[in-house]
Length: 222
Image (cartoon, rainbow, N blue to C red; front, side, top):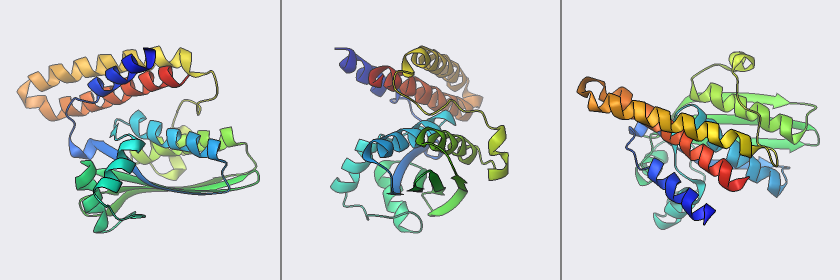
């Protein structure tokens, strides 16, 4: 019952319209040396990083299902083929990631691509050594914020971001994320109602929907 209610609320929150440039999807993740459990946590960190910067993110399962149904090209990370991916998923931004683990050394490349032209709009390349998988995911999360906000790699240390999720840590964060999301959606709706601030309103609603969705998912998965 709890999961059913959570996912109903999740999809309701994502039902608000958002401009294509504020809709994003993780379309290609290549990893080497990561255990399956770490790979799942990496996917979560990438999605949460996009949501934290205000993007409405297409769920990974929907990306896989749509790609198979529309016979989208596999491994498309930039260029004209990405326009087809963007239209099928109705997103203006696509994220690609490559993460390599070698013992306690991790390196990664994150690229945010504009789907209409298939051109990169931001990229972060960094490494972490020696470090644990938790520390590596924390650094990737911070890099996602920098990438989403258009910051340079040099500014990463100044960007605050909650630590990557660890077992049992989500219960306290979920209510705050959900409350912040609801507040942002309400503010966005007011701005949309004020005709000359519709664009700002839709962006605010998109950000709020992402925060609310993150809170619900943390609650469900904790």
